[in-house]
Length: 76
Image (cartoon, rainbow, N blue to C red; front, top):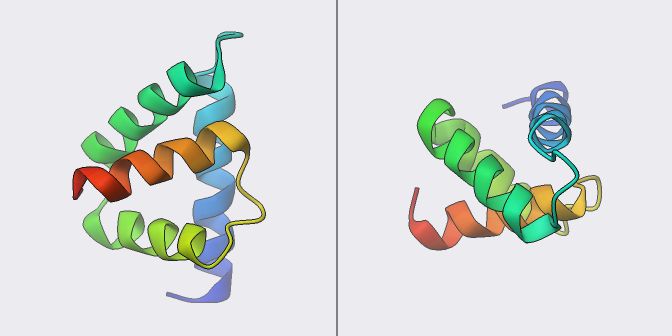
């Protein structure tokens, strides 16, 4: 996956987080985002965003970070 593809994944993940926020707390948003990623993201996409978080994930918003951590520990 190229650097541009990773940037696109980061942008998509943060947009999903924004779209599913509904003004709720980060943990609730993260659950929604994780469920979305598990259902709709290809395994390669999930693996890449998990790898990015493991390397620091500085461009991920807090609910997005929590969501990626959830999919990482869920084995998805």
